[in-house]
Image 1: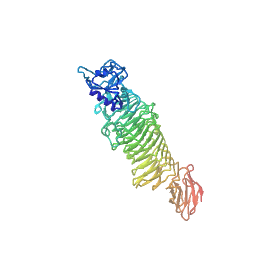
Image 2: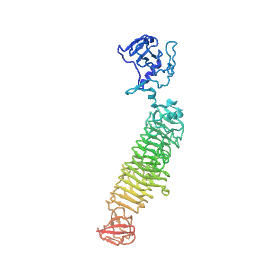
Image 3: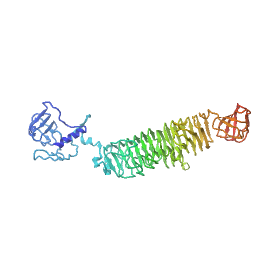
Image 4: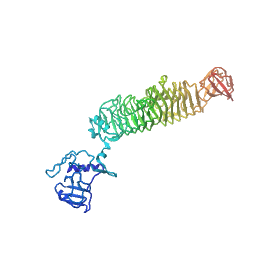
Length: 632
């Protein structure tokens, strides 16, 4: 009877209540010398211990025996109707009189049970799990959680478990798959449209871990290992070993969530993928509200990404993807992207942790694709090899991106651009518009690096910090290219730690620019190489609270300050550094004062100032001269 008692302990270990012998009162416990004596009882003790041939413990039940055989079930010959059932029998005997496939031989009087127990069937006794109230069959209870081992998988990291794992997915509709502490080698893509919950035994091990002890191991390169399209499917605590070294893959992904919604990937570790997690609709068919949380992606390949959003969808139909608390690290000098947005409507990012990627976040829609209404409260990039943030239309549409309390720190790589915003496809319908940065941090980590706005329109910087820890920084913010409608308001331009920089803002082609109420600390707060013909520049600390001096000459160039002191007595015939509606106050410092003749690029009417007198000049772009709007 060893197998019976072993089975009993096994069931107890799983929290399933089966009949067991407890201490009994004298009236409810009885010892019988044999099965025959048990059968001849006229009273009905609750528990009878048979100590002779075929010893064992039997429990009384008022229900008739299913198949009395005087071994497992005994029907008394007289007295109340019912059945004594041997304890440790893990299933009910079939009503046909056999033991449901259990081989029973009685030639020696001792039953012999085959070493392989039969499947638990619907005829099994009901059991009550510890702490619960409702009894259920073992078959029903065990079917709730599926193991790949139930379908022939081995999970030793060497055997090809592809077919059995696919069979597991096929059978797991609305059920949980427990991978357990095993490593399954998968050599072909797995996919299911069932709603499944896949749970592993190894959560994320961090950005310095590159191997899986358990989980799923790719047995081939350049494949998407697992594709899920069943609504509400989830994958958690699974380690994906996609390769053994950086650049092991040039395509594919560890996981792909396709058309559907409410997907969850949480607490997974992904090593050496091309793409870690791929979230995408398909054309106009949506992927909706996928959550990526607390996953770690180690060393995605060049050209790949830790997370790719909207690769197959169009018009923003990968909707409301959420990325929280994920960590991703590059593999040496690389061109991989942390988060790549190709087609996304309303994505949300917060508290992610990138490190040494090629680019931290890249917004790069293709033709027919839209990335819009992104909200990022996040570390966008840290020490990336190229850009911490790159935004480009690339033939698609980018609009309504808000970076609030974001953080970007790096040296800009070969482009020398820590952040880069451009519209490379403007001539073919590309759009970049309404991009905002509020309360964010731009840490410029290299002498020639800068935050570079090269294209797009309606781009705003409000209440941000721009600084450099580098000791010979050049320009913190560059407004260039074809960018228009740029607002720079309430920002602080300074040095980090022992850094030192030369220029706060350089205007190098951008137009229609509002630079207001900032705090400057650069040796030259504003420089303008080109552009900026339409501009508001006012109320900036480090600029408008200072009145630098300029020596009078036939032609002078005014600095960007709102007040300028003129020394000397030379007559002025040309005043440069103009923009539409610029207002500046000039004051004569030298005894004898100076005069300004009227004419193009000079004052519209002649003016003479005595020592300490001032004139308020306003540039008129139509008249191409300075109006004298006040004199004191």
